[in-house]
Length: 221
Image (tube, rainbow, N blue to C red; front, side):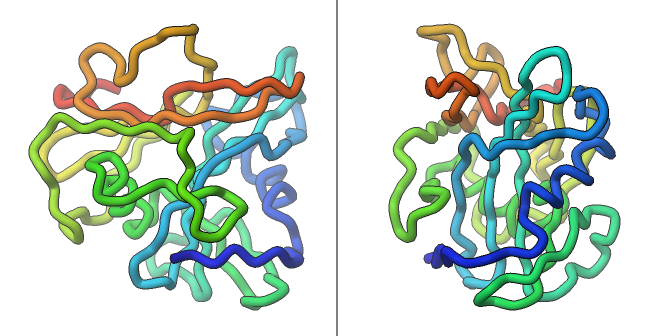
């Protein structure tokens, strides 16, 4: 169970994202972003070593406000071979130095994301210890992929998504640009064998729900 520490971070996560977001191919803002935390959830690392957070931020630096899904992992030491995925380093008021990574490149996050999709793990509230996030939805209609069988993913960034290749030949499309789903829209989307959906807060204070990730057997991106 991840323990949520309400303490200081220097620099803050949003300060790290301000510098990192413009380096991503799916960033559509104009100039320096102005990220605002708008939602998300956490997953537990069974070993208790890696913090796992799926953060949603909104940014109004462009012509319209855009929502981004930013999976992050937090580690107490550098992740070997993942220098290209480093978002930045922070000083945590309780835990000390922390290395923040683009979680799509972290095998611990990918393993736990598979566990969530298959129903072997539950999404946890972003800011409260040991509380299940009931707004996160998931489904899976494929064969089981056992715990610990997911290697480091093959990651491909596009203009709107990140693609993760799974050992069984399926492809997980992680939506980086978030769009509120039309009322009554079905999840998973047509053609998908699994999904993760969730909610976030729009600038006007209302709650939006939409698709975070979809799993496809045909490798579509």
